[in-house]
Length: 171
Image (cartoon, rainbow, N blue to C red; front, side):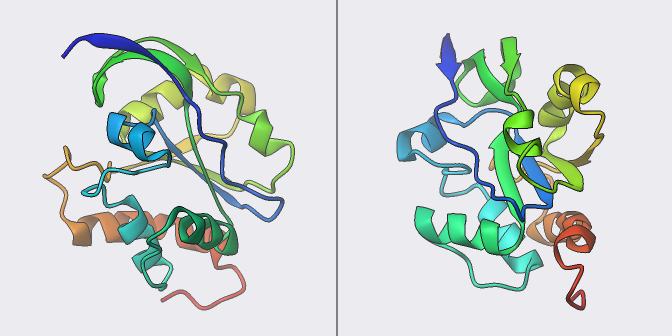
């Protein structure tokens, strides 16, 4: 598979009540095909985050947006464009970051979480110097990360709970 230039085309999910910003690297080919974040059927992001929040799995794009907003979760990606081979984060060249202030100037973001090591690395290099908000690196929910079990992902992603469930008892 050859390296291609990819431009991010999804709007970020957020509103003024968003407290947590969850950042991937760049939408995968499958996500771009279906037109939404974490769109590969084997990507575990929505399954893990809904389980952590104690809610049923949101199946449609509309249900996922409503779920994220109801739980004060903003979803976006670090990059606005890059050259990449398929979904291989390790092949990324010429990254151009998204402007995090698209979200930060409107939402009460209290923590940033990167959904994988490459997203964390790119955020640290390109976004952190401007935002001053460090990102917590969570394990990737990608099907390529088969080393991390569903249970381990859920445990790691519980780190978002103190920010989104301030008025509720943690489960």
